[in-house]
Length: 230
Image 1: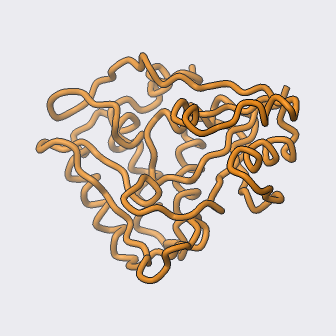
Image 2 (image 1 turned 180 degrees about the horizontal axis):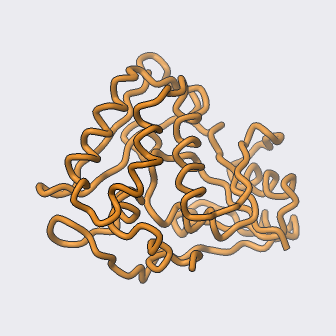
């Protein structure tokens, strides 16, 4: 039975996001959804000696109240060099910094895409490649979009040939389970509880940071601290 997940793209997301990708056969980036400010679409956190710090990709939002994630343009390409400097400053003493920097630095200092969706996908694919996650990643616009919040997700899953839909726990508040049942699709909730701490720099441990924190600190052993990698 083919497993499908459908989630908006995020900027260098946390390890749970990549566990969801690894748990399915096809991962659909749902960037036809409306862009939301102060969300994970264009920002994430790293660990620093002063605590967690936000890294934010500047995007064009003035007067664009209804734009989708797919339509959201990056505003200033100088952000990339600044983000990389923050990575170097805070992770250069991490055990696996050199190994990760070999493939990560060119992503920051090379040419940058114009749109946020393209940027997010670039980083998602690079991390998946390092973790040997071979899940097929597609875009919501590869398919037709139905009306209705739950109906749209169930329809995308069915069009992708999915018999099981994997969802994060937060969606329990709004998904209509019966819609999936009526379409013959099993609905499974991913559990993010119980992640083990990993060796992490700078004070008390936190899970709520970009997966790059895990990679810099643990390298190829990162899978030991995730659910669907070995």
